[in-house]
Length: 501
Image (cartoon, rainbow, N blue to C red; front, side, top):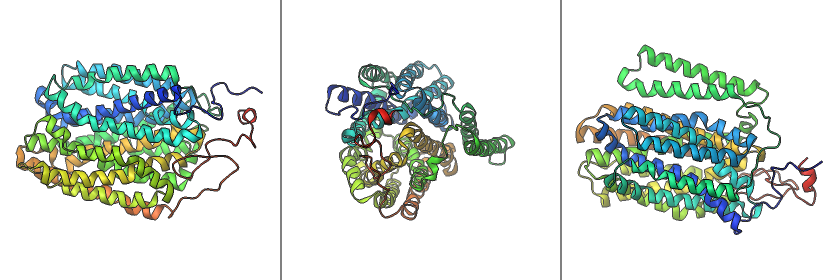
């Protein structure tokens, strides 16, 4: 029987080959585009609010609209990649994101901008799972860890450049250019992907998609987001808020039931039978819930209460991104040697301490004494847990479901950020705060809530993960950041032709 034509040879792409480098550029460019966009939008929000004359509650939807679409459909994006080709869906998502970015740039009012951001989220849901899954599925085992490390490190460059680029664009030609910058980056990603990335898919995947499961996931997130966001201005006892919350609860219950009973569910239940996968995703909820709101809070406080320019606010947390860029590879290597438990326990505690230090920022803030210390400590916390968390999730997943596993973790991270952006500004009073004194008080309450959320992930990882993760070694070769499921067959014991049947 002939091999499945879309599957790679045992060796796969070599990182230092011409095609390997171009394929890496494709994945880095697309993920960096999404990362850069998120950073720039955080910096641009106060300027957008002034131009359109809208309050914080409306600006929240510029962020939550994007995150809602992204988190609602990212599971479907991962499943589409596994079934119809990871490169194909990755390219479609990148083009979609670029077109939606153009819509954001020409938006005449806040309503059109929010709609365009929702379309951006759909594109992000298609490209995000494929970016990492392409590396897992396309590169040979000896280069896979290095490729993922390079992807993380180069993605950190985008994070480091984001505050500079965002501040320069917002203070210079205007916030609309923060979206136009995505167009050339998307073009680069598409050209590189089409020329160097091999098409891969799960050969065992059913061609029929779980559209019902995707619809239930989208309904659950949409209803819960609307309820959480509107609970502030309408009140928690408002009939429409309670109705939306009830719809969200029923949709979540129906999604879980479908996942357990459907023949080919959107999310295979087997993923969550792995204790490591489940625990790390629970930790993701807490950690990315804290991260998702913290950068927005600091940028908003520095511009609205302290009166800093967009560029000054954008670069205020630059030490955090520089630490992630310079130390992420070393953190990933440490996790490979000692296991992820220590870093996933200590990292959240350090990140929480950094957020508490950042809560000292006030109307007369000094960058050297009130921003820099917290930025450094927060950055060290992120360095400690981000790389091991990602590596542990991917290593715990079945190799045929790398796109779905990546989609699940991304969906959880985005949904957590979405919930924190909807809830924390309301609970802290930031959504209705006026004047530097009120804004600062609400900002400090919100950042302490975020710090407590992050810290709670430490005990969860300590209790839920073993002191060192072990798996039963089969005859197959393996090479991944954490000892996990073998990613390739041993060609000596499982010939290529046989493995492809």
